[in-house]
Length: 251
Ligand SMILES: [Zn+2]
Ligand SMILES: [Zn+2]
Picture 1 (cartoon, protein in one colour):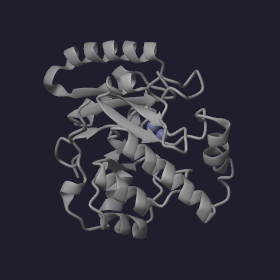
Picture 2 (spheres, rainbow, N blue to C red):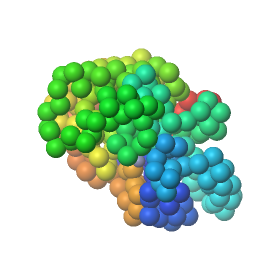
Picture 3 (cartoon, rainbow, N blue to C red):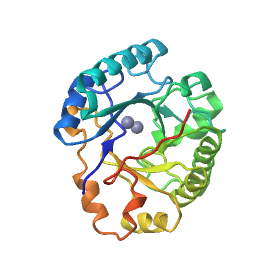
Picture 4 (cartoon, protein in one colour):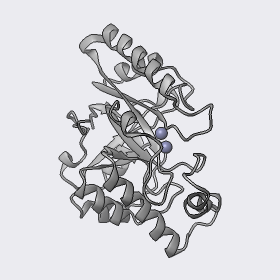
């Protein structure tokens, strides 16, 4: 399988351990035509959080690298925003969203919730992650929060669905289809069974394969996802970065 680009990667601007240059170089080496840098959003612990200043600096840096590489690779800047409220609130402003080339939504237990109530209702279950089977009520609440965000924001990609934040994947995928949001097949955190993926394929949603690389060598590393996908039959066009350039929302 040939993938056009990797649209979920981290750098030292958040919790990645490689520089933007190293990630770009690796993407080119792996034959990718596009790369998006999507560091963690604004509600993360200070050291890992993107700030407006860091974001602007990264854009400048990205523009410089883009000039250097010319047509070899197209670079994008986005954010992996955090779901921080039951009402679907994400940790970024409309103004910040307008500056994104790609907007990813993820759930991370280390981000700061919108309020104590949101922390109790959405985050507490992450601390109980040793419990494999969260209650139906928790799953329903998580699902609703994620769908609220899908309805509220121009999200391009839902990252690592079902990872540490159990949702009804079928319901989220259905909502994603309705709002033109892609469901990610994440090489770092992959929490779908074959049966579950088959059920998700019965919706009209599309998918995107990303590495979520925090280290440059993992950029464009999709082999496990390829093995998984090879066991399913589906229209290849539903994996939007398979062989071709995906389109993201205009902002
Ligand atoms: Zn993430
Ligand atoms: Zn990530």
